[in-house]
Length: 333
Image (cartoon, rainbow, N blue to C red; front, side, top):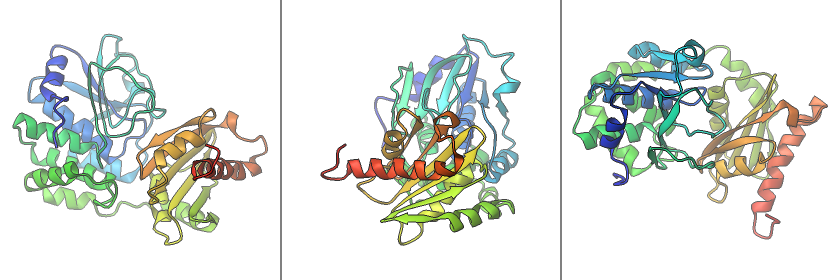
């Protein structure tokens, strides 16, 4: 369960006496928020104060509800830009520098705690990158290794992050995720956890669900859904989970058009199709993407899309179908 190369005591010692910022990816979801909050509370036990930050927006009800439930203060970079300095320490959680979904803020990224594969290697003073169902499991494990108990709110937040990122323990689950569930559940505020899991859909989400259903196209076991309007990142991810529930679909690709480009989410139940690698390979040279074997996200800038917008959908579908064809036995990849 424990990675002997990663000693949280080293991270704590590294942070002593410094101004510390804990940064998530640009559109923090419950797992990212849980990681940042859990780490902030852990560092505080050792006298290290830290500020939670991101550069983007909180664009999902489950995330904003989580912040309200636990009274978590997570500040957008625009509120911190004037005070952050190059000598400040930054800890990246649930993200990695140069991953495509994290802004390079003023400050020194001295540490990274993440559960995603690495596509752009970076040297950190402290690094804990392990493939798990949820990054919150790594933070929970730090409490175990240090002999500390999280308070009921922190335990509930970490547990909620684990449950959300593993899709209620049905996606990418590892032994560490299960072990941390056993550790956290007796300690958590069960009432707050239950409240977080109720009423997480907004009325406006129904329009996106409708368009995802109406627009779906199947190519063998690959399902494509196109949302013609801008959707929050988290909702696009949820829609890709939804499309994957179809018995005819083993790989789901959902994309949403925005003013500055196209946001994509991929889900895979095919053991021969790694969602993160599919995104990375399909978007190489025209965008950025990556993720786990079962799930990933990406973005294509407007400049790399066909000038005639009506062909953009066909362009994106061809990118993925061509990449899949190259990866098959006998393909040209």
